[in-house]
Image (cartoon, rainbow, N blue to C red; front, side, top):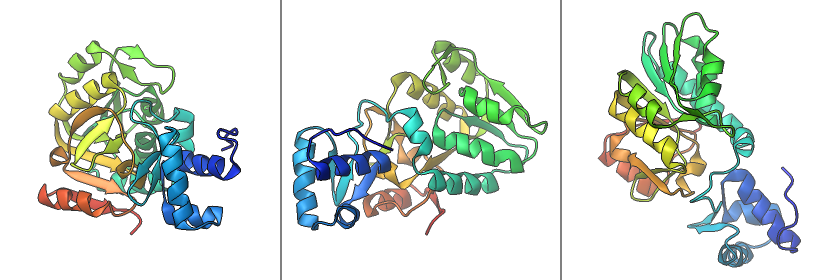
Length: 259
């Protein structure tokens, strides 16, 4: 991705570009790529975070994204391999004959593609893109809900969606999220999309959470729930120690796709 000059300082602009492309990147990685010391990187991050261009995290930097989600087209091309490995692992786990709720997002679209190995699935989704991946499979019954269709991510939202979801019962809800806070709070960006996820959660036996590692180092504004509601977490790298402690405490089954 090419980012236009933002600060006029080439190193700072490159640092911002790396953070935007990765979601989160460590001080060590930045120092290696930019060929400076970690002390210099820490100073750069402090300056850029004060300018509200990136956010400071322990040991690295992340996007400033607590209000606005990163552009959908950017997310489609970020962490592709991680998302594919997570998707394949989830597809292996899901039993044939299951009923699934599947939400909106680039990660769950990868999962939808990977589900072609399964048989006799019933899928209820509020994503036209997910439905489009799945509906041609004669093994599957695909149900979309009626509501307001969003141009930027093909998601369907609105009160009709929530009432429609409440008439179904699913074995699994498969979803991704914007972020996981240090205390285990699950966060996302859009209050209308979150309302749909919450209704799916209430009507599912188990919650499968699919997160690439960047989601443990970013932030979002709308509360979805807590890690104690999650049954299975699929992620590409071991989460930070404080998250691992919460996962163990709440008996969440963790599947690492890239140990």
